Image (cartoon, rainbow, N blue to C red):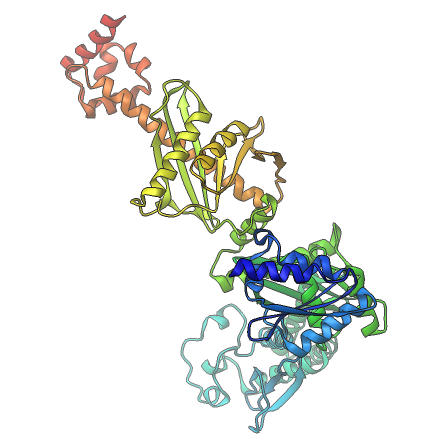
Length: 610
């Protein structure tokens, strides 16, 4: 049935004209589930109903629900973009990125003296307090309130004026000890001094830091003239705090006076877009948005920008992005006509603007990781690795294999597992190579992976019941080709790559059947790949050394008077069998647990062999 539906839709799509227009996807109930625009309708719509393996997960889900589609022809691609935007707002299709047109306002609540308190509020109440605002951004309100409370050492807790008037004394909280609260609840500040600080904080919220610094400076000088040194010192500290706050703001200062910076993070079919607003060269607001589904990054940026700025958001003169956006010139024209001023879209490659974009992207990754309950750096590295290797999905489970031996003796292999970018040690496995007598790393790697696949088919081992999303071999093209043959033999479709090192034994490149891809040491994907390669090498060589040590130890225990305990003591003392073989009886007797009979037996054993 599904094949018949796709064939019917594909045939219909191929009858479309090669002209600009808007296409409207509908489900079985006739409900619109996706709206898009195309420069050539026939080519774009036909892509949806061809090979499904090429699509992102979000697109595959949408296509599975398409029963029919309509279309509207337009004179040009820009007209199609404007119509697309209008239809999306009218119909709110499930698979388009949807944004709410408006958000609630935010306020700052200021209670009357004595003991004024300052809090963020979402609505105005008839409670006798003064409300500053409204403000569009909760970020602006929270940042301003936090700055005012910390600068003027006002309480950040939920205690009220009545609590402060009880004058209980007692032990103040941590904020008092770190200089962020004057502790009125413990009688550490007079009512008059508190109210003066609160009035200055309200003045700061109403007029800004520059005017407040001027006012406080005048008050400080006046207090000094009156020999009120304690008050002058308190005002001096408040001035210093305000100036310091200004210096901190410069950390995120931009030479571009007016711009919005947009960056996104993708992981596990979830997406987060972070937006920084710069006005007057300073960061004035920030927001983040979450979406379901996984799509092409440039298409996500396209849909977000179109939906966000057509929904009433303030349009800046410049949009600075962390990557390319679909139909960039059309979007610039669309925003320019809405603002009636030239709007430019840029993707910085270096300098201050790239630094700000990276900061914005790190925040997007942090918020997405927090929402998914993952580690920030791991999500970023896995997303980057997916794009680098051209994988269909995020490689949440990665297995890596390495072979270890000494000149072909005692050949073993180690397998390590990384789950969501971190070691999953309960999945680690060791293999003693069974099919080889002589050294052949490629054949050894093929044996290990085949044994792993056979365990998967048995389904007895708790970990081996599932297959990984990605296999990374510690080796080059030879190992990759050998394992590819094994996967083909068992009809297993797995992403497979090798990791090769440079002459300094550092991870250099990723190898596939089609060639090498260099890894840049500054990228998160490089760090993850290098960590995996180092971990599997450590695990494999550790197993090999342990096996060789056990083998050597067993040869000593064949000597009369030398048991396992004495064999271990001898190896700890002398380090190697060769050192033991050249030791004199007096030297052997210095080893803990040795007596003359055992020492003589050991000495005679090696001299007899010589």
